[in-house]
Amino acid sequence: MDLEVMSVLFRENEADATIAFRVRGSAGPPAMQMRYTLQRDGSRWSVKSKNEAGGSPHGEGAAPPPQPALPPGHPTIPKQ
Image (tube, rainbow, N blue to C red; front, side):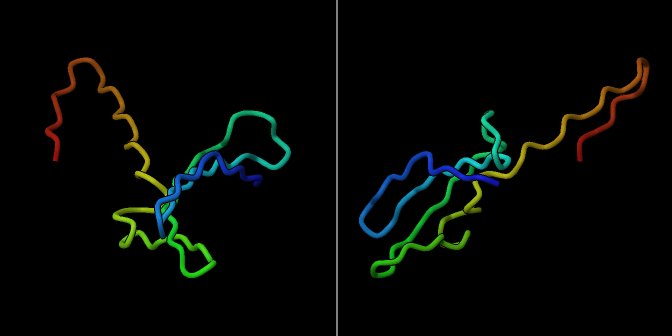
């Protein structure tokens, strides 16, 4: 995978970075983008744990898969 730093927003000892991932050598659109919250420790930066960052450092979870259509006349299934 190739990665590209799309943006970085710095705040004192923290930063938000958006990274795009592409299939190696691909010129097409990114396969995915992720947002990371970074924390400075002296002269080094590290990715904050998801608990410190207030969630997953990889952004929100994937959307749930769409529900398949029921055949005509099938009774409604209650949501759980």
